[in-house]
View 1: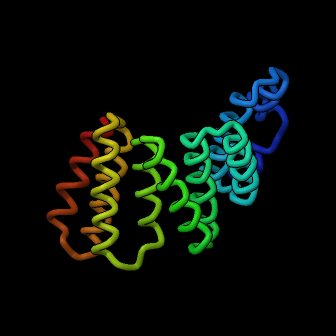
View 2 (view 1 turned 45 degrees about the vertical axis):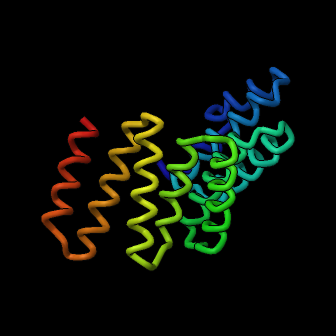
Length: 176
């Protein structure tokens, strides 16, 4: 829902509980998860603020893996707002931190989101293949389906409909 439900206090109970626990690691994780939920609900300005808080919290903890994932959440929020430069900057930061920490999930997400504002289809296809390889290496099947579907979209945009269809069928099988 996009009615602001994720800003209500009752929806933010995990964050409140993490703060009460006085465990900064749980608070950082709760902020990151809340930011992801917010951008998926299209409350992007709230998501950007929450992701920024998560970035600061993870940086304070010296946790590059978490910080990288929070940068990805910020990138997704900014991309949905049409703020391509900021989105790409945040995604690049997420990619750097994912590489540094060996986070294949973060690497796949950061590489994928760099395709969202990429005008060069050849570059976007290379990024999608890298993203798929990262998710395959990490064993994240659900994300493999998403990237396979994104590859299908790219080939469809090129007019290569048979290849796109094969990828869509493959993505569908992966989802199942």
